[in-house]
Length: 268
Image (cartoon, rainbow, N blue to C red; front, top):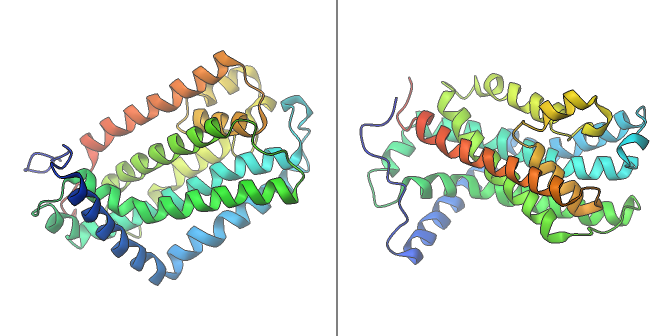
């Protein structure tokens, strides 16, 4: 159900005040993140272990059809994995906790706008995820003999679109999640779909063409393709435009879904 109060998603009249409010919220969320061992595990260690697991799994696959080396497939998919795990798996339980403790409801009684609340809550995990992604790019280039990004602007665009999409999907999932404990269940379907079907674990080029086209419709596929091309190339202009349009389409879908299904009031 929608809140009785009309959502205040318009920008704040004073830009500086809006930034200060979001910074204060982000600082509080960062403090809570650092105090939670589970959240720190998900944010710092789990992505690294999953990247290492991907490296081992790809040793059994023939990546020549995809035009990738093992290092290129692991690193470009690893960026997507870091963003998926750190942002999505951390933000959903955080928002559910704040909602059930009536923190979100109390925040909405003040001057802060709804989007400022959500952006402030997401900022710490987004910062950690982007920082880890950039470290992965630098470390991978140095340690795994992968060339430096050929198109840094496109790489950053892919990361940015993935971040926005994942934040929106996390907010929607939080709205559909009743308790913090059930967040482990509600996040699993999208996590598995994105990890397997969006080219993160396995490059889409090794799938049959019909499967590849279906996978291109999934939430992170366009962003992952932009990340991969920004780093190692491989797409022509039409394919870049297609990937960008699919990624933007999911941003639009995410905004609509947040407005439709996110709940500000406790569900219990």
